[in-house]
Length: 162
Length: 115
Image (cartoon, rainbow over all chains, first blue to last red; front, side):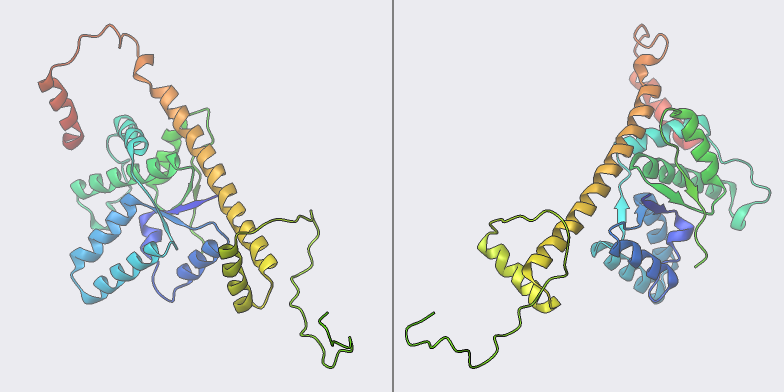
């Protein structure tokens, strides 16, 4: 099944990494890995905000890989937007976490939740499955199944051990 | 065979490049000249025949197409399931409802920023 990576998985892609080997092998088999536009937005934001030469280099490298077709970027288009809105209407705020993750404020947690909703909706409507270790995505996938019981569900796979 | 050719070969002809043996449907086809030149160039670089390159390229394109068709089918199926389940027309009373004012609509759209 075609595979999209969520942000925490996608962010690990870098030169000379096992992740790159994996992505390259999928590309060679004609089944390239995809990121969502929302994921790319999160990664770009983080790298630009860091304002470091190494982060600039990584952003340039990632853009080159996308331009070369190694990674597909799935657009957040009208269908994904409609589904993400419906999901948010059903679950407006993130499920309570046992402890505040990564030192996030409540506001940051909500932004992350919006991005997760957008990512799941995008992956779902483009016919992909999602590779993610994030605890939010199984919750969202369950809600998607409730919204669309007659269709194959969004599968959430744990990332392989690279 | 040209005039004056004795028919006796004085040197071995260059060995023809052979493609990997395949089983399947044999077919004769006309390939546009410019395409054939490109195929021949790729074949020379890869140490194989233009026919082999042609089959490999077709095979890759077919694989890509099959993937795209399967993706599109699942994507459409998922979208249709959502559209059917969430169609505004399926909501009770939607057709009879009084239209919202512009102010009400703006307020509703802002809810996304307030939750």
